[in-house]
Length: 164
Image (cartoon, rainbow, N blue to C red; front, top):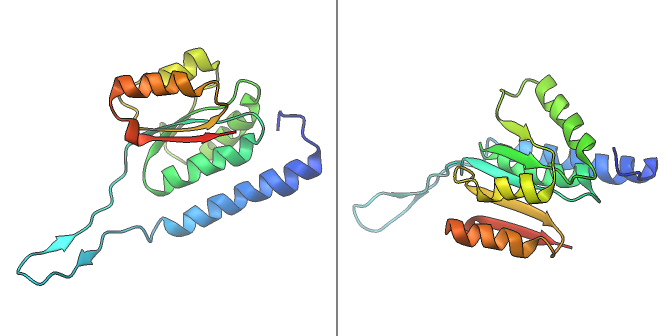
């Protein structure tokens, strides 16, 4: 990992948390399904869960592996694809995880890792019309820029923020 963390901290917190996160959501992958809801009339009422589509994920520098897992695992579990922008200070962690994802046989295009600077890559992800949901964890300094892009796109309800 490219954050300069002590090995034991990275191993027991980041790596262990990442493994637990992927295992947890892997367990949900075959349990997310629609339900038939009983009604009194001659009406059928049911729910159907569908993938959102393309999810954009922007992660911070301080927990690069764990934040990647927190964004990737639920999106993939629900059948979505992901365009991921790691923090510019920690791209190697994301790129290494991307090589592992490729190695285990994910189809091309399911997980897309795009390293770069926030004002260019982050802005492109946030404003792209084919990205249906944005998950962002980062500083409050970036918040106004993302809100501007989201308001312009008219789907603020599809935005998930985690600030620190």
